[in-house]
Length: 248
Image (cartoon, rainbow, N blue to C red; front, side, top):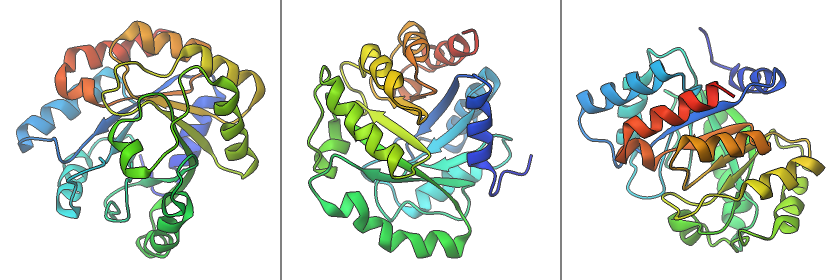
């Protein structure tokens, strides 16, 4: 399966076919040995995850990023960089989420880093997927580092306004992020409200700990569910989440 230059097409075709997708987020900073990563990757792939997201907010070097991507290279699903800064760019990836943190007070995270990264992405021929990134509720480290004005869990109208802005700017996806290890995920009711008034595909991540929550989010309109922390803490639960989404 040749994925270079075709990842966005792969994602959007699945969404247009009314399929619910699961992305497995692997943080190179938290990955242990090669054998451990190989076991985790195979388990997630066999369960049916639709793509590997690779990235983290702190402590990720280019060497660690390349190490993880090298282990994943034989799997016939997309390997997508989930960047926190310009250090997370690698030619070993199939694509990169070209994230703009829309509710950041720091212009660097809205467009500044992108100016620096764009020529590198072009030279390395990595497929960019323009994505509006919106931090909701808890926010965690990503909110702190990105200087985000966090949208409250129950402020559906504000979340919709940001989503529509992403849609009208021509972005391919919008990512509602509650933060890594958030005590509570994005409210399914927020997802439903946004879906009612917008057409851009929705990614949801942060604080998703079980299959029931993931399924409810998907039924309310989430097109892609991302899990990360649960993969590290309870791989069996992560597999249940993937299989649960495939049964909707």
